Image (cartoon, rainbow, N blue to C red; front, side):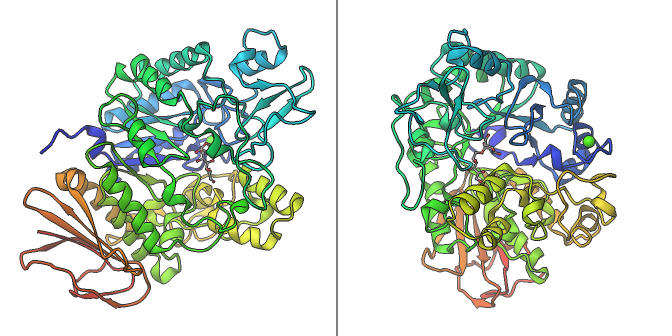
Length: 557
Ligand code: ISL
Ligand code: CA
């Protein structure tokens, strides 16, 4: 077999610390809680844990607003807890990927406190300050989370840029001192022995020269800053520099979260030539079920078309092959639950469709990411009401789109939030059927999904047919069968809007992956040689050309 890197064969398990396990009973998940649950992650078989940010933070955007990169958020514990978690994970052969959030800091970071203190402070140029233009914002960019991307600072009479919320001022990467400070900080973590970085919105760090206005979607108020900023002029120079000064110091895994990246950009970020990153999280498939009204962006509740999904995923499979490496994901802390979005979370179909959705992804080429709770088929949280939500993106969406701009009524917005809101993924992990699902002994920071008595880890572990054991097998197969990592991808029947089937072709061997995306019985014929065996399936027998609701099966021959 070809020269396979460890991170190409690895499966990542994403832990959202706030919602995983509360060890000290304050209602917030923490590092000691993760340590207590390492055996569980080991049992699943994941190779790597991606930890969402655990750094000191005022938590305006749940840790994505960092006030000290070299300290741990007291809610989660201490640096001693972190060091112990790292060494316990390593003792089990599990690696740890840290979230790196360096497009912006918190407005409480020392750099920003100094920067905003006066126009001639030597940190002024660490951030992006501009004079007002005709008494208002320097350009028309909107924040990713609604409202303008600029905040006026009374004391110095200038605006600062925040692509996300006000408490997240953007760093000025043109400044070599900013870059060196970031690289020094990264080296602090590399020296601790962490195994890599997941780089938050790394495609946004280089702003276009002159900060030109963005296109305003029809019916919208602000210019699209994502389009205006993504893949800016120097981003690849910065990443090459980072590779030299930090990433090459160890055999690390790096994944760039790359909003606004298409195939040709992705090949630059994740080029096999090892000049920048190992892989990116691309967003094209996440946007296929956006609202047809661009002013409403992701807020919508219709399911994706299977034809579009096939076309898109297949394009990424084929175009990156041999050139760059894919990340494979259905969900994360910013996305709704995979079974609710792509499968069917009604009780009668939840388990079978969760396994189907998993199969479809885990036989593709790339590194799969499993978001906590996905492996037990956790669903969207339909029981949360407007007053229950914590997420700033959801709150701002209600405030701007409903209350201020009247683009949509509150009831429709709530149904969109139930379909797409980030809090669907952030409700606490469901460990067992006891009060608060074994997650905490006190009041959880975010309401639990009210289905935890049926859907929980304890139940999953006691049922040999559970989604959990299905994921365990998927991971094991990836470890054992190089064809899953290296085989060529070939889509079958691109026009079939009910079944997603594809092949993986190795040297003298192949996999045929068949997935019924509907709740109907269907008849489909495939070329399956007599010697073929069923490698994995979510039904316990094979009925040939008859595909039962959400049936998924993989032939090997
Ligand atoms: O969350 C999104 C859609 O709901 C994305 O557009 C998201 O804003 C984008 O993927 C960037 O996400 C990352 O950076 C944000 C943070 O809020 C997210 O949690 C993080 O994953 C700002 O740091
Ligand atoms: Ca706690």
